[in-house]
Length: 210
Image (cartoon, rainbow, N blue to C red; front, side, top):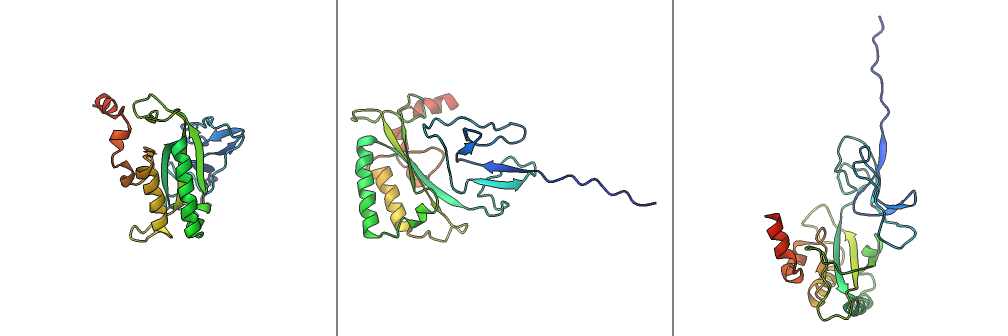
């Protein structure tokens, strides 16, 4: 009697994205995973189309809902670091001018950033939420510019990034010199030094969490 062969179930492949946006059926956001557990959400951006480099990967479904492009199990994945902060419009103009001067000193220094998304900038409004971005003191408006800087980072923590000195200079100018508000979900620990003073709603948030 011939041995019955087990039925071969075709491998399902789905797009997986974390943290980035791309156009999907006219909607900017992350694709749904596991039957809609993570549904795509409409972006607040006014752009007609969202594009991000390197955040959309196709992987074999293995019941893992935490797969991201930087997961070592994803073929062709990558590891990158993000420095993200917000500045009032007036200070943002001064910050951009200083970044231009750094670029002029060493034109190759920001080439690594260009491989990802350059320096992504978007306008954001002040928020009264406990952990939202508060209206900047002494500024004529609550409008701010959000800077999102993405660059390659080695999987080896002891390996320095290309032109790391310039990238860290940009980070320190934005966070400390111009008092940028760090993004809660990104950045190195250094960016959160003194963050409690920048977020007046933090004590109320901590009280609520307790």
